Image (cartoon, rainbow, N blue to C red; front, side):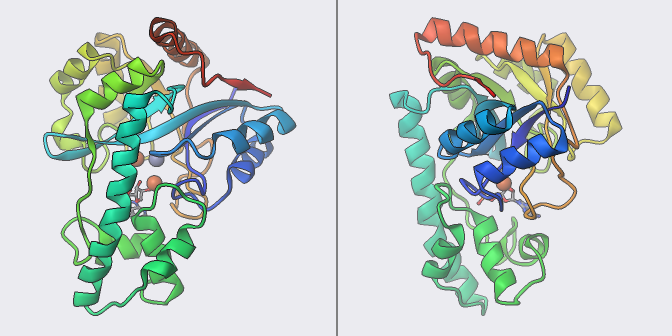
Length: 292
Ligand code: AMP
Ligand code: FE
Ligand code: FE
Ligand code: ZN
């Protein structure tokens, strides 16, 4: 049973359409796919149609931008209703922050001697609802300024580089509660990856558990064996679900191939049970798992 619960499409900063990601997942032999674009549910409908066609199970999700003690924390929200008004309002605020940041990024890059046009970046972003640094990176690659997204982040766009501009993200505790209230299951993405490791020790994770956190994404490329072992221990102590995912971005992120990290079937069952509980309590029946 192959269960990959963390992937991106062109609805955010992946390089393949939702249909292509679903088709590749089926061709790779996965049984269950979570589509978790950044701050957007825009890929869900297309992915659901493809999932039915290729007979794979699709779990609609999002990777939500949050901030905890000044650090970026990514929160996977599975099966939460994006039309729940308080969640919708936060998503709109985050998406507006992404758009607003673009002009400032381009101004800073220009000051540093690299001139890009906002229209080029928007064209590069295509149908993406969540405009991000990867789209700017792709334009830098297309213009020959750098050779890859990685190099674009290392030289121009990462924290402390000339084009870096912070953007709005929801307080993590608030977003955990919003996902629960929207009938979904919140899971911290790559808790000890770049950025969030500094602020997410066992106590901080336990505190988020008190707000309704359901799980930890233990199996992720950002975590080595020692980190996986320690995070599994924290999850066991706090009765949190252990998930895994590839964080696939198509050609946008190297060494994150579909299925490179997976979730155990029993853990998926626990995750879905928690989401069902929250949905019942919230009185919200959408979205649902698509069984293709
Ligand atoms: P943003 O959402 O605009 O702040 O950009 C962050 C996104 O850029 C992350 O979700 C990753 O997908 C991607 N990213 C971050 N660092 C790198 C990197 N070094 N190389 C390629 N992509 C990256
Ligand atoms: Fe991304
Ligand atoms: Fe992430
Ligand atoms: Zn991701």
